[in-house]
Each structure stands twice: as structure tokens, then as C-alpha cells.
Amino acid sequence: MKKIKMILQDDPGFYITDGMTVSGRAGYMISPDCPPEYKTVIEHAWRQGWIKPVAHMLESEYMWEKLAE
Image (cartoon, rainbow, N blue to C red; front, top):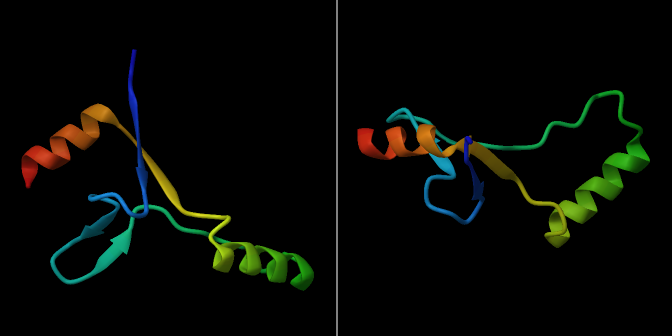
């Protein structure tokens, strides 16, 4: 059974770096075809903290990444 690790935005390890650039493991992408009124609602929910990024990794991948540090 493979175990999956959930990584929240406030957790250590949510942000990754290549030494020059820092990036979140997860993010949002809204299609350009999304109607403006929906974009407004999504943006409002994000600003209120009702929508948050979350990343998922296999526990084994996470373990290997931590060992490499």
C-alpha cells in the first residue's frame, strides 16, 4: 500500500528551490476561458483563506527528498 503525504502551504517542504528560484509545490491555474464573474468569486475566496494550495507526494518520494538534503 502506497502512502500519500499531504503538504500544506504552511508546512516545511511546501516550497522547493533550485538554489536560485523558490516555488511552491502546488498552485492555482485559472483558464483564460473562465468567465470574469467566476474569477472574481475565486479570487475573493482565495483572499479570505477559503481556498488554499495543497500538494501531495508519495511518502517514499518525500523520504528520499529529505534524505537528499
